Length: 118
Image (cartoon, rainbow, N blue to C red; front, side):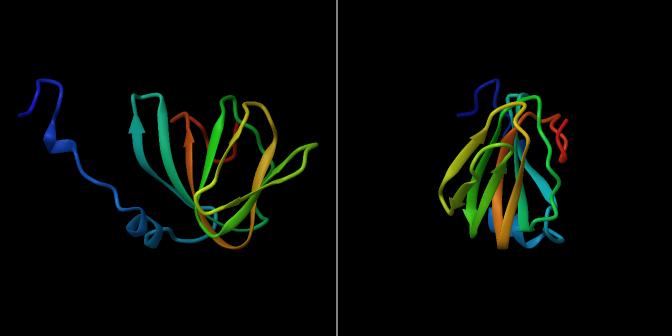
């Protein structure tokens, strides 16, 4: 039974493998979902060390989907993530993702977060 707040016309599963196949190259990302207008779930391909150092005004969650990568943190040891592991970069901390080989990450952050931070 459909309740008054459900709209089945807008409900659909998201295929992460299909989204990965559609990424054009390293450091490109695609939005997969928006939750409560306060949180975005994005997918990105990481490869190499070309992504710039940056920070965000809010926390950023990295969930390694496949491969291995590290989140380099300014003034701290990098955090290495393997498939199935996650790490939250606190708001304001400069960081950048680096991957020796292709890896895919799910990012959970505020919908207004820009790719290169604030």
